[in-house]
Every structure is written in structure tokens, then in C-alpha cells.
Length: 83
Figure 1 (cartoon, rainbow, N blue to C red):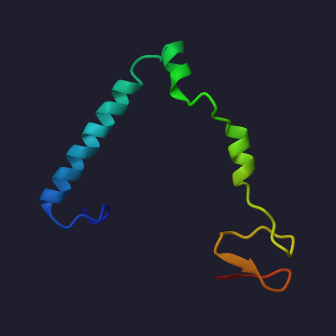
Figure 2: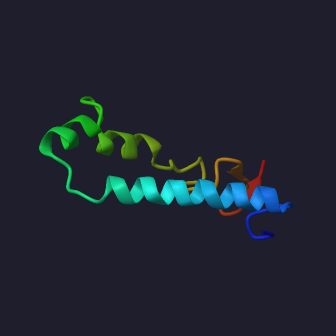
């Protein structure tokens, strides 16, 4: 219960039932291969994974380094600090 952050037995039972239902739905989803029609309908027609990856790639800051998070910035050309 502590691992999931649950404080009551009722919450633990609700959580367990929800997870069991989720697992059953996933098992049903993957129980048979998808048809070509289902595969074609799975993604938006204009979806471009490569363009999204390029857009979301971290950019180097003014010091030429890439920060570990968006809430950091370079202060002296080699050291990052949190904003």
C-alpha cells in the first residue's frame, strides 16, 4: 500500500481492481494481430515522428552546451544552474 501511496484498504482494493481491469484490457488488445486497416487508422494521417523528434531535440544554449533540463541555464560557459 505504501509503495502506491495508498492509505486505506478501500483505496488499495480500488487500485487493485483498476489495475486488474487495465491489464485485462491490454491483454485483450494484444491477444490478436491488428489488421492492416486498424494499423492504418492507429495514427493521424499527418503524423510525422521524425519532425516531432527534431522539433523537441534539446538545443544548445549560448555557451554551446545542452542543459539537462529546461529550468537550467549556463552561467560561465561550462556550469549550469537552476533558474
